Length: 183
Ligand SMILES: [Zn+2]
Image (cartoon, rainbow, N blue to C red; front, side, top):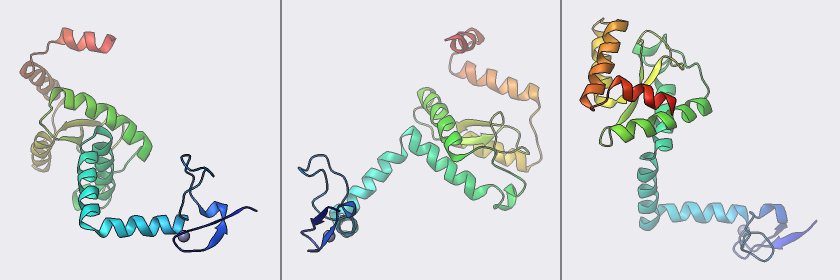
């Protein structure tokens, strides 16, 4: 069994204790995994490391995938737990949700670059499941939730009327919709 000396903790350790690093001659990190972990944690506590961690986090959560992951966290904290969501179930896996939401968020942000996308249950009595979820702006979602708590459930006709209204706001016609479905 091959071993390697760690220059930080001064231990001779089995080679598996070193992370892989293609830029090193022996294909492994200079320091052992334990030391790399300690070093990274110590760096995070410095002002420089804290700032880097923060800006990375902020930038990451603005990407469609970051937003999708944040939505999933929100869903799993609400569904079956929050008083208004006790009956609500999640009928997809995390990976399925994130794959779906990432694409939907990309499409949403193309139309509304300055709005914050959020996940909405189309039928507020229904579950988080494909067919009953859509990405809408946070402000519209809040307004919908308030109405839902007031007891109003939108009929199919009202939902269609709302979609047509939204399309007119953005200068889109049903022909545009049909064309986008074909492509
Ligand atoms: Zn070490």
